[in-house]
Length: 138
Image (tube, rainbow, N blue to C red; front, top):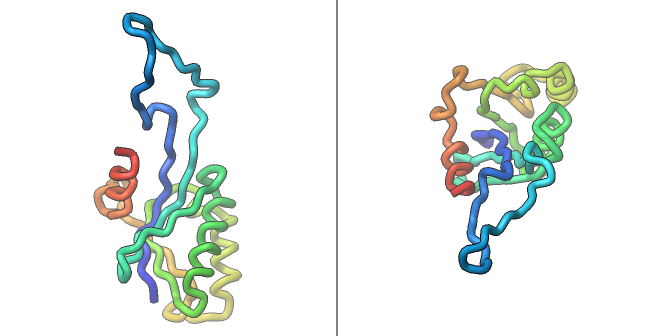
């Protein structure tokens, strides 16, 4: 079994700031076309290897979550996965539940291919992948 601390990271325009060269005394402006535009990454910290597996997705939703779980399955096709994550609505959606039902069909709970456990609500400090995201943003 692989134990994976999993979460999404959304990089927004305000997350990344830097310096640009310009003429002294003149303000340099860089237009932002859409301030809400962001990049979404799914990531899992593997408890055993301490590696982080990251995959870009279009956004954090049911489709992205299912695609990421399939990506994780491909990493360890013969292993069972224990996914520890927060209670995001798309982690609990009907589509995700249906996917898990297909993957685990006919198996006893102790044999499930993917077993998901939610952290207590509103406490990101429980998930060590949050530290990885903070380092990446910094």
